Length: 497
Ligand code: NAD
Image (cartoon, rainbow, N blue to C red; front, top):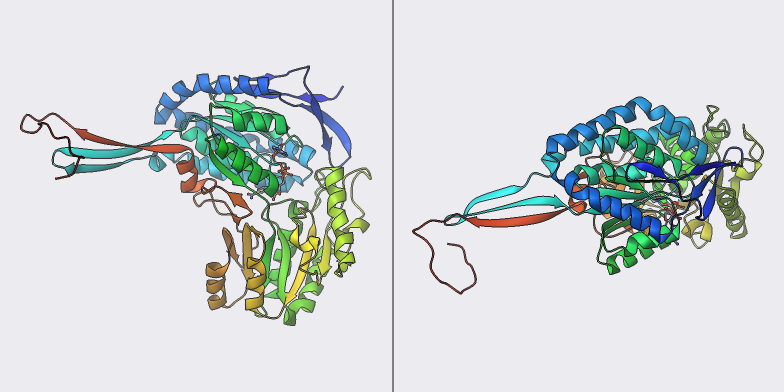
């Protein structure tokens, strides 16, 4: 009997025995560890009903009341994050220290969201016209749905739900069916913190559940993170159903290395950002664009740092864990053949890895490809694994041109000691998040996260000020209190005097 992973609806775990299920694996052993229940439309309807019933009381709860619950959640999360990290590692495969890192970045958003009274304060204009005052404030939008990817089962939901809840909305989270238990753990913790039943719900599922959320008339907004083709579909379908949508997609992040950069620092950054979390990060560096003069030196420094990396079970103090599923591992590995067939040089082949773990785990070691042709699918596709490509260029200008020609525009970084070049880069690059000598420029919680081009659809980023804008709508009120000296009939359009 495997562990069944159910929904969380109206403050309790809800199983639906007759539904389809999907297998969940421990990627470090290749053994099935659970079966996640897949929602049908009726299950999504039940979650929406619970969220709709809970909404008025949650919206009307005082600022102090909402703060108390969210603060308690922050305290419980901080105290018990080790449990959550174990769950993430068991289903995703990333090493425990990395799982703790993603929780820390999610917790940062909880802490930011706790300042919501400041973010939601309105504006007031006294005497806009004689005796007329105008003020505006922001109100919650209703039921906010979040659809999240496998690679950050705790952090990505936490990019959205703390802000959505703080703003007075109720939430339905549809996590990835590959690692669904973290969402359930977070729901139980919110419950323990005192969040009323129905305010936060988890619906497990696949496309059926997603489509039911996209089409449901009572769901006000969709916050999606995942691959680009699905992000585009989500954006078009949800917008077609009149919803507010933010749909973050895939990525192919470049780092441009100029000859004056500190090459030891660059090599550390390339290895950390290329192979951390087995490259399954939307802000991973997947291409190093290196000015020819320093390319050989850099490759030497990168390979010498790759050799001692320990690949293995994330619970054994390794540097890098397995990939999330066998199919994904095989797909990523296939790009090594594609690159080689297209003329790239395989400098380090991750298929030869000797992992510290069960031989049936979904292993692929760090891989380095040099002289990758920009016409190869190994360059143009998002690989989403521990494969770092080197593309050699002759100058800053050629590097920028290459980066801007990419279909994606999530993050980009420059490594240089030339302030003028860095200044030009941050202005000229067509991407939403830029690093200067910083390889993974994920903005802190009080700035917002989001890419450009095929890396994001919709015009509002995640968390920060933009997060509060997304989860609230503004209302403007024009008031005149009775004054016996004013009044009279005037059918003309109101003007200010
Ligand atoms: P995915 O697109 O396969 O799945 C994401 C979510 O969509 C999951 O909840 C899944 O159940 C659902 N889904 C999958 N297929 C669907 C379909 N046909 N119709 C409706 N819903 C569907 O992505 P993934 O493999 O879980 O995650 C990896 C991807 O996410 C990568 O492309 C990565 O770059 C991207 N990502 C982007 C960001 C960002 O901020 N831009 C952050 C993290 C991950």
